[in-house]
Image 1 (spheres, helix red, strand yellow):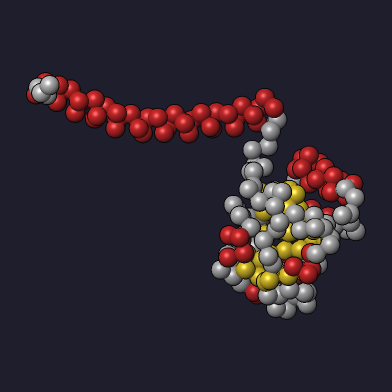
Image 2: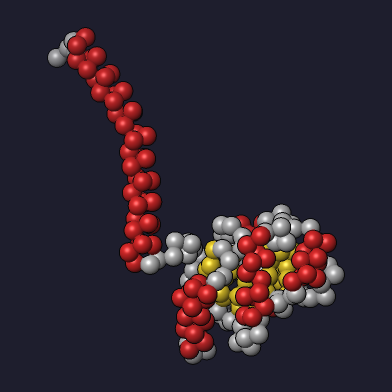
Length: 201
């Protein structure tokens, strides 16, 4: 059966409509996702800043970062966190939210059950030292990440970010953005308690 000019034009016309619908379908998908996030936040009280991480439940990426020169602290390596419940905080001196959360980190550092360490992200050494000179240093070890490679390995979305790592090296919890009272009460503290209640293997 031969194709007439009319049917050929009709097929071309349908193809144009199909192509024109693609952006509309993509937009509808994005809108639906955004609507679900807002619904979860408003109706279920879900914190949309708690971005899921593919690393949760898996072994933490290897750490072998040079120390922050002048801080008189150890480098951030696997041996520093091995066998300890550890909070790895990713920060920079130029990060305003990092400054806002710093007093909370200083309080967390007083908890003897928690090993608090840091990755200094794309920062200048002198600026990082000045940051601690102004605000104090809550960390037991600091590793510098001048090119952001370690942050990529850890799946960093935007600083500050924090990762709770079990004594066996498993990532238990991730926080994107600065800690506040709500994220401590509903996120970090329950994750810590659960980890501490688990018998050592």
